[in-house]
Length: 164
Image (cartoon, rainbow, N blue to C red; front, side, top):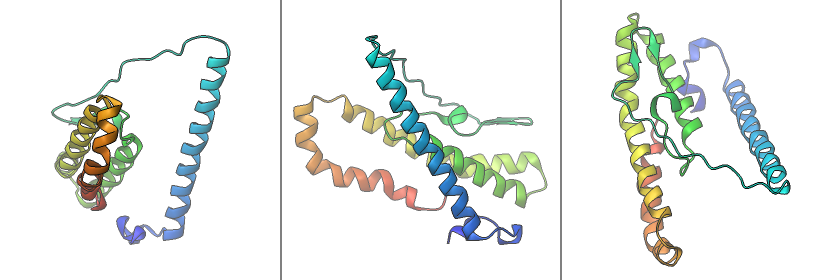
């Protein structure tokens, strides 16, 4: 199934794609480890950590002329759901598919945005819902979670099981 997401005629095997995904996952794990160490070091020095505001990007179009914005540059959301890297990878895969199947740049990027927009809208809406839940008092959110959690999980992740 994984190999079918990319064109077979490119000549790469499924194992090469799995290796690439493993390398990417390893990079993410290393970044998380390094970040944790830097947070620990900052706290040991006795300084309060700096908290910056969360910036979200919601724009009407992700391309203009020869420029295309992908990932967080096009549709950043709050870090509640941690979908930034996934969105960027999906953008790249779908854009490559559209560029490979069309000879006209404008038609390819328009088709790419048309295909990606509903999924990104879903991720942004789910992030908004999760952000609202995170702001509830603990006594309320902890008591609601066992009842609302499974339904919310299915609603949030169900559409993401489909091919981007």
